Image 1 (cartoon, rainbow over the protein chains, first blue to last red):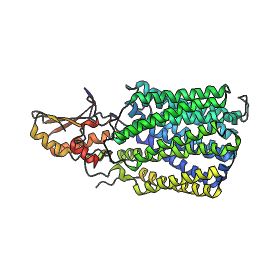
Image 2: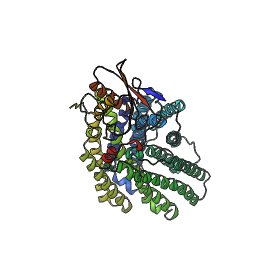
Image 3: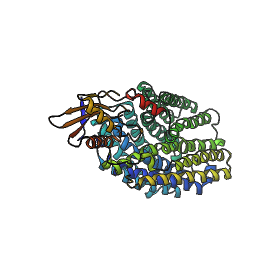
Image 4: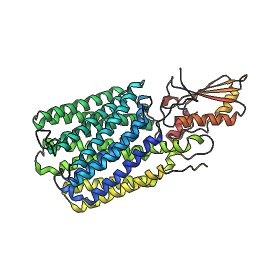
Amino acid sequence: MFIAGANSPIKNTDYRVVLPFYAYAALAFLVATILMMCNVSAFTMHHFNEKALAITHTMALGWGTMMILGASHQLFPVMIEGKLHSNILAYLSFIFGAIGIPMLVYAFYMFDFGIIAQTGAVLVNLAVISYLSNLTISILKAKKHNVHAISAFTAVIWLLVTTFVGLLLVYNFQTPIFTQASVHYLSLHAHIGIVGWFLLMIIGVGARLIPMFLISKYENQKTLWWVYGLINIGLVSFIITFVYGANQMLSLISVALIAAAVILFGRFIYKAYQKRIRKKVDEQVKTSMLSVALLGIPLVIIMGIIAIFSTLANQQFVTLYGFTIFFGWITAIILGMTFKTLPFIVWNKVYHHVAGLGKTPNPKELFKNNIFVANVISYLLGFAILSFGIINTNIIALNFGAALLLLNALLYNINVFTILFHQSKLK
Amino acid sequence: MNVATNNELKSTIALSGLYHVIDPEIGLNIVDLGLVYEIQFKEDEHLITVVMTLTTQFCPMGESIVDATKQAMQETFLDYEIKVELIFVPAWSPAMISEEGNAFLNG
């Protein structure tokens, strides 16, 4: 059965759609670490403070979401074995997000929920709506609807729920929409985003990419469907528990369901690792696999907070919980996967027309591996030291950890922009 | 490695050229990777058809690998028209990697 001839090869998403997201996310990561360096005291207060809100949203929207939006415009067609419906919607998604996110972050930093915050929140929602529309039409046209694609698609619906609740919360500061103050709904907004958007999307994409990069024989769609079901049931039960103000201990059931999903996913990745054909695993895939292990830290903390420490005295654990999510698991997988995707996109852009005509460099040669290693070392040290600083409200550790994470972001940006500005080196 | 052909001699020559086409992600040539299924020669039309696959249908490097395959064949068979057909049934699996390929990946 012939699927495609060489004269009509399958077209990837245009690199011009994808690359701006990578550049934007890299810069947002740098901005987040600068904000953190300048405001380490934010980690010693109640987590609902203007600086922490600004840093969290720079990380969640500017870094995590923009990076995932960019990469998924490239990867979603791989998962559905179809084409991205519209480049224009992708550009719109970028433009709305690129303008809306700094407005929102600035407003949080100034603790001003007026017109700038409201406009920023509306723009972020428009970015998500553009993205969701693009994915919906792409998936409807596609031939394959596997667990990876369904996970990614469901994750984007949760993202829209998150940003819409966020929009309402911004308005609620000035005009009461909800029965209680916005701070009350913070954990609802945050967890729909963390579990529904980030966890589901990263698991959906990671379960496809990590075995592919390992060249693994392992496949288990059934496990991945279980993971999908457990995460969604866990999240819905959390929302119900929250809305109906049930006993906090009931939240443990939701956490247990999500923890079970994470354990199953970890087992899936471990089995894929065991059944890999490529024995030598590169640093980028190792970093991505490390992120799966890092997922366990926030889960242990949240269980601890609910079961043991459910008092205000343990605000530091709440801060640590948020930190380990955004600077731990999410950052680790992006650090690794950036250098498994971006070099190939740029390689295709620069060398596609000369493939086979001469000796082209390997995509891995588009960035400096020693900088990547230094990047990971500074990241791991910074993450560990800053975590220590948060638990002990130790300003020296917080400053030192933040400085290391800033160094990590600088090294990351050097490598990302080296790739983005790569010129042909045809040998 | 088991490549179907209607001309063993020319197929061997063709494969020697295709050994230089490398999957940039894996670092292994497309022959040992098991991507080349068939090489057919139509002498009366001066046409060579390479039937091959990719590790995944929407492999981000797919276009480049197909172009490089065409170029490598054209360099070996100057007077022939080269046609590369991509098929995805049967789908590629790691079991298609040759012994040499496995040795390379385990090395």
